[in-house]
Image (cartoon, rainbow, N blue to C red):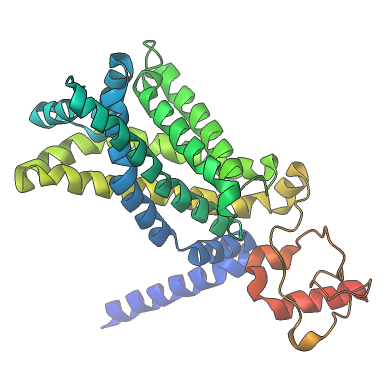
Length: 342
């Protein structure tokens, strides 16, 4: 009985330490609130589903109508990323075979255009993840449509070059690993800026891009070790359907890492030492008006108080209250505005 009492007391002590940790280290508290608000697993599941249902068919279509060099590059990338071996790899290669008859070629071109346009569903899902992480409203469709297509085309191109890139273009892993990290960082830096429509400057997006590059590289290395055995075991247990089960599970893990990196990158970019280095970030989203039409105590210029002591005048910079709690902490933000106005 005494042993169980000591164990329970130890567990209670650890739980109390964990609960107090966000107050002791504010960065951890802000990161946890950001991850809960973004809902990482929900976003990752949506991205994985859109990749499986729209982007993967587009990849097959591009491989069918692309030159042999691009088709072989895509097949090599899929084989290495998913651990495709034996009969499974042969089936994927057969799907990517180039049709020769004119009738199927004519029908395939129309189908290819529709499939590639449908793949922009993944672009839209990724855009919503970026906007949720940065607490931005949705971009109008007329302004964002070309960005969706551009994002899909660039990522399909990069995927075709993924296999030689990981091998360091024949020089080995010592060059391939850092190249993969650098290219992944640049791609996710560009991805955030493109899908956010330039509403966030380049420098604040850099921490999230670095985390995404590291996450993608880490998941890629882990997949080289784990996926071949998981794929073989799943195929042996479920037959051809095992490929889909394993692939979908791998996509969920991949996009969980990506969503986590983008969300945490936003928090890191607003931490004081790094925020000074990256430069001030203007307001990213409209603030709700004060309840009951009341002005903020610190407001000036006749407008509604924004909670940071700047009333009604545009171009404000978000304060710590915005970073930690966002628009939901109106009470604390108004108190800060009153103190600044005083």
